[in-house]
Length: 177
Ligand code: FES
Ligand code: FES
Image 1: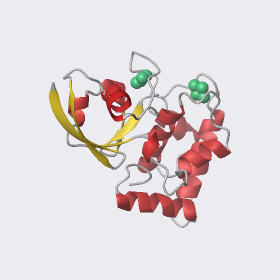
Image 2: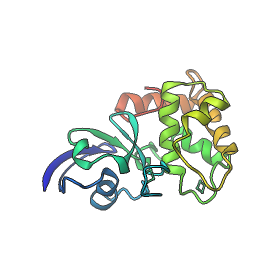
Image 3: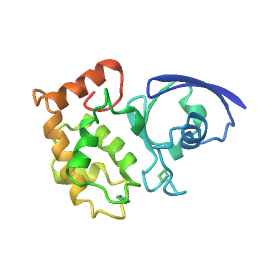
């Protein structure tokens, strides 16, 4: 066993893990972050996507020991003061989910995408999300949601943009940092 210390959604955890424990299993089974889900065993689906030190990663393709000393943000760490993150809100508003299984990973990846490109066109959104699979929606409303969020997160766009910049100040990854 190896001792690791990881900050998950703003809370520091110190735990013993097997060297082979995957980050996704650590998050779900030891930290209790079951909002991060496992959708495949081939690192293909993206359902397990989280942010590791501000970058999106498929947490089934990272060992927990590799996150030692790092900061992880999961879907459960995005809402602030009872308000959804603008990307979460946009998925809701644009009916960008059906069964919802892909949604946590899709949202984490979308936030990373918008951090790199705050104003993507449809093709850039599709390209940025190509590692995340959805078998329900046909992707159309997901693309709409990400572009809707982009508009609301742009500087000066009002409360949603302010929420993202206050999250950036308080260390939550993504959202245009
Ligand atoms: S569970 Fe990680 S990519 Fe599918
Ligand atoms: S909403 Fe069902 S897999 Fe995407």
